[in-house]
Length: 462
Image (tube, rainbow, N blue to C red; front, side, top):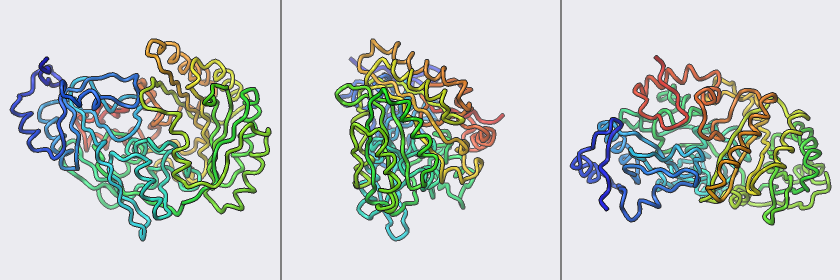
């Protein structure tokens, strides 16, 4: 069966000769509906998203991105941008229109002398860690190796080094970005500083970032791993965790989860990363390891990339996913009781509730210094519904929404952009907080027609 004609946002067919000329100018590949590789190319990590783009441009470099942006603008096409990772909300793929796919652009170049790293926009954290670890370095980025560096950094970026070295976006030195006019620009503290500000937490609103330059730190072996407790002790564990982590040195990042073990047993767990001197870390972690005692204590010295990939199996590609998230003013006893009660009602053993504590280096940066505004918040709650059968979607989504709704009396009204699924405009605006108005002005300067709008969108200022 012949593929349908590509149509623009007004339903008008795009000239086939224009498509052929566009394809001829690419170093990468143009993937069309009906092609042998189309089904795989349109598939993303979250199987809940099932969309059919009109074209997918598998870019080889920044020049291909420029060609794709210009072609899409000239032909009035809806544009989605795909990096290398999860994209739980599905904004990386579209029905109709064109997908600018950077997933093949994975190059990582380490400058060990300067402790800096240049990373292409399709790389994952695993790609990044593999190269930096050779030099005993690490970039503060995420907790799952399959995460895409682009989406993570543009939305803020929280990981195992957040308390010591800050957010991923705090450690960006420069962006190479293709803006809506088809220009390739460098955004840094010296070049286009307004765009540099906006890209550090403003999401995918301002262009296609083809590469990032990051600051890296001497991190090689860490003391980390998993502590597992029976679910019936979850309330006690969360109360202990609260008191422990709020007094812990910044070298320790530890998150708490209400989840199931691989054999299906309901559990409560803490996963920790100590990035300081080992003997001191042993002393700091001792009270956490002695609490309970745990059913499993797997904390041990390990290469940083091993910790970064420890949770990968809990987030496999091809499952159905729906996420909610909210910052809390504090982890009160009432909030803890709610979290435990609702986690015990989870309709899938793959679903989890995650409590993340961020206070540390990220709090020392002013809320208006970057687009990421919510630096005064200490606790973020991730509500991660995951299941395998599409027919069960309604009840799993209802569970996630139910917990989110129940938490509202304890919530701050702020949200972490990278944990959001498809949300109302008010929630997206709240995710940008006090910086929204400035972001809207910068959006007007660099993208006045809202060309990049299949994202957690900021409308251009009027």
